[in-house]
Image (cartoon, rainbow, N blue to C red):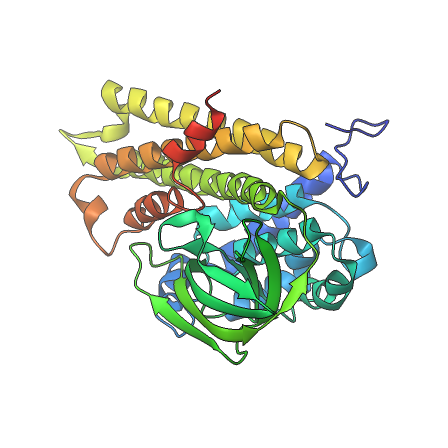
Length: 370
C-alpha cells in the first residue's frame, strides 16, 4: 500500500485520507442513517416504484457527497478513493438502506477503469453532484462470465440480467460482447430508445434487481482496456465485501441485544454458556471478515498488485461469514426470527442474495486455485 510521510493511505489518484477523516465520514453517514434510515423506512421504500429511497439518496449526496467520493477532482469529485466509498457501503449494509450507492460506485469504477477522459468529463460530474445515478449492465443468463448484451456498429442488443437498481437509475453502463471475444464498454440513458426495463421479484426485498432488454439501442462507446471485466469484478467483490461486513455486524448486534432481554428458565438467554460461545464465534467472523474486506479495498484503491487475489478472497470469506452469522442470528432469535415482523430475516436474505453477485463464492475460490 502506498503511504504518505504521515502513514496515511494514498489512493491511486494520489489523494491522502487520514484514519480520523475516514471515521468522521463513517460517523456522519451513521448519524444520518439513524435519523433517516429506520427499518420502517427501508420496508416502505421496498414497496414503492423503483424500490429505492430517493430522498435519503439525495441527502447522502448533497449533505455528505457520497457519490463524489471516488471521483477525481478534475471531474468535480471529492478526489478521495473507493476506500472511502467502502466506508459508506459498510454503513449502508448495516442499515440495509435501499439507495443506489453500490450500483453508482461500480458504474463510476467502470468509467474510470476505461480511461476514456471524454466520457468521464461528460458523465462523472453529474454523478458526483448526485444529479444522475448509474448501474452496470453485465451478466448474461448464465452469469457474469459472458455478457448478456452484444454490440454491433454502436447498437446494443441482448439482455442484461441481475442489474442492481436497474429500474430506478438514470444511466446504464453496459459491458458488452462483440463479434470478437473482447468485451467493450458503452453508456446510454436508461430511457433511451430500444431499452426495456423489467423489475424482478427478489428474495431480498432491499436489493432491487432488474432485467434489461436492448433492441438495437444506440449507445456511446468508451475506450477500454483488454482486462476491464477482470478489473471491474475485482472492484465489485471488494466493495461488496465491505457492504457484507456491515450487514453481518448489524445481525450480530441484533442477536446480542435480543439475548440480553429474552428470558428462559428465569434467566436472560445471553447468560447461557452455549449462546455465549456462539455469539463469540459470530464476533470473530465479523471482525476477521472486516479485516479482509478492508485489506481488499485498500489494495484496490491503491492499485496494489495483489488486489485481484485479495478481492476474490474477500468475496469468498465475507459471503460465507455473512451467511453464517445471519444463520446463527436466526437460531438465537428462535421462532420470532422467521417472522415477517422481525428485521433479522432481512439480513439473512441479504446474505443469501449478495453471495450470488458477480460470481458465486465457489467460482471465486476456483480463480484462487493455482
